[in-house]
Image (cartoon, rainbow, N blue to C red; front, side):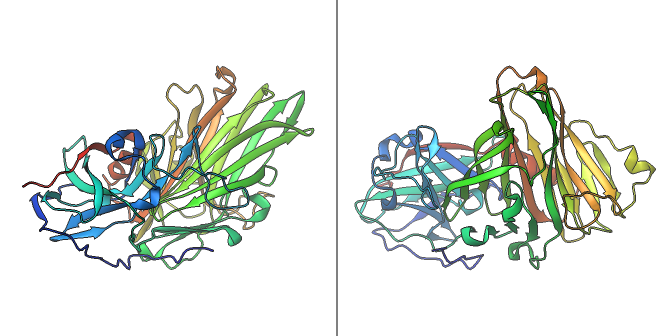
Length: 428
C-alpha cells in the first residue's frame, strides 16, 4: 500500500524527556536542497540495533523535533529492496556498517548542550558542515530498545501501480511503452506548481554497430525490468535492469538504481557491453512541449536564449562543448539538468539544444522540440578501458533562476556536505 504523502504539513512532535535542552550554538547552514548520506561504519558506537529502533532529532526554536530520515540497508553493495515484485528476502534488519543513513540538510538545527533522551540506549551527535563556508548544523540520532514513533513528514512517494513519483517539488511519471525515461514532468505544490505536465517525453537516441549490424534504438526499444524499490520519507530508490537486444543478444545491459529526493531526481545512464560495439553514440533529450517565452542558460551559454520555436543565428552558434549545468526557466520556476561523468571518463558529454517547433520525430507524441535540451555522448566510447561506464543524469526543480543560483545546484554533487559523528553525552 502506498504511504500517505505529506507535503509541508509538518506535524511537530515535542519529545518528553528528562531535563531541559539548551543550545550553545545556532545553526548557520544555508544549504537546503542537499541530502546528507552517511555510511553506517561512521556510527560504530551506536550500530547493531534494529533499524526501527532508531530516531533522528533536530533542535529548532527551542524545541526538539523528530525529523524525517531513513536507514537503507545494503548487502554486498546492493540496496535491500523493501517493496515490489522482487523485493529482497532479508532477515537481518539491524543498522550495520554498510547501510546508509539519509536525511535532508534543511532539517538540521542547533547544537544541543544539555539534554537527556529518555529511554535511549545511546545517542550520536551529527555535525553537518559546508566545507566552503564552514557553516554548520546538527542532528541527533538516538537508539532505543524498542521501535519508536517517527516523524510523519514524507517528502517523496512512489505509486508503483501508476508508475508515478510525487515529490514536494515535482511529479515524474512513466509510460509502460517506454519505461526507460520519463514521459511526464510537472512542478509540484512545494514550488507553487499546478501539476501540469510540461514535456512530451524524455527521448533516448542511440546509434550503434555491433556484430556487423547497425541499429538506432530509441526509448521504445530498451527493455526495462523493475526488480523492486525502497519508498522512504526522504528518498525513493527504484532498481531496474535495462537491456538493448541485438539479434536476441543483450548488447547493452545494466542494472541500476534511480533515486528521487524532494527537489531532484538522479537517473543513471550506464552502459555495459557484453559484445563491444564498433561504433556507439547516445543522446538523451528532454523534449519540452511548450516553453515559449522561457529562457535557457547553461554553464557554456551564460547570456541566455529566449525560447520561441525557431533556431535563430545566435542559437545555431551556441557553445555545445562539454557543460556543467543548464536551466530552463520562466518568472516563477526552473528546470535544471546536469550530467555527472565518472573521473577520467574518455567519453565526452556535449550539450544538445534544439528550439524548433516544427522538428519531426517518429518516436514522440507532440510535434517539435520546444525546446529539446539534453546530453550528447558523442565521442570517446572506443577509448573505454572496460566494458562498463556509468553517468548520472540529474534534474533539479526549483524556483525561478537568477545568476549565481547554479552554485547551490552544483554543490550538491561537486562539494557534498561533510559530517562529523561523535557520541552525545549531556553536560552535567
